[in-house]
Amino acid sequence: MTDFSSQEPTAAVLQWVSSQRAAGFDSLALYKSLRDSGWDHDMACRLVDLQPAQAPEQASAQEQPAEPAVPWPQGAGQRVQLDAGDRPVQALAVMREPNIVVLANLLSEEECDALVAAARPRLSRSLTVSVKTGGEEENVDRTSQGMFFARGESDTIARIEARLAHLLNWPMENGEGLQILRYGPGAEYKPHYDYFDPKEPGTPSILARGGQRVATVVIYLNEPEAGGGTVFPDVQFECMPRKGHAVFFNYSQPHPDSRSLHGGSPVISGEKWIATKWLRAHRFD
Image (cartoon, rainbow, N blue to C red; front, side, top):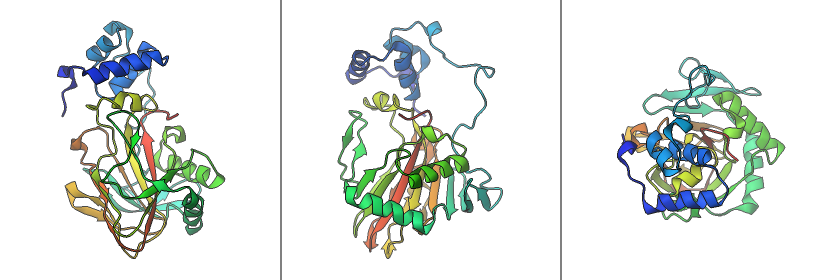
């Protein structure tokens, strides 16, 4: 595990604090972003000029309602049929360490087709979040086309988001907008982590919008002729695409110990369409 208590702030981190103050964020908001990205209590207070007693190091059990640490499909590992609110979903496979669930019939064929049709005219070269700057950038490891829907943008998207919130026992407002990706022949996304690296200077500004990512849902909107599986190299596991099915995984810590390394295998023939939903620890705005 990374020991943030001994980590000294870089010039980039100090610059980030200064720029966030200029943007109007107060010390407590900056403290929270730093704590979410892995800085310890005392160092976070020092960076934002707070006395340790002024910041909430740890809320008591009486102040905080009990809630799950990370999203999880309710009943997965205990029964096949899961309650997704408006639609029954099946847990076909469950793995622990890392936490992975293969879900069947998460979306109907009509919902898959509707997402593809709505996304197709809005596709562009896929970007990734830059943890160096907090912005976006092209990544040579990701050779797909993609776009984002705004949360609740259409009736179809709102229905899918409500379904995921019910199934995973996680607030809709903690989810990023649904991303649609298209992979043509030879396209892939090399193994990577979805959480934001706490050691990178751009991470605090990313986390200011909703905290860390804590779980991912990859939904298959079609079936490529060959290739295109979702691979987890740490455990030598690969989930092959089936229309309307999905693979869910969570990660309770932003660290390789989560064993959440994953990637999209190259498409050998045909094309692959997926919808990705990332879930944050807090409300995402």
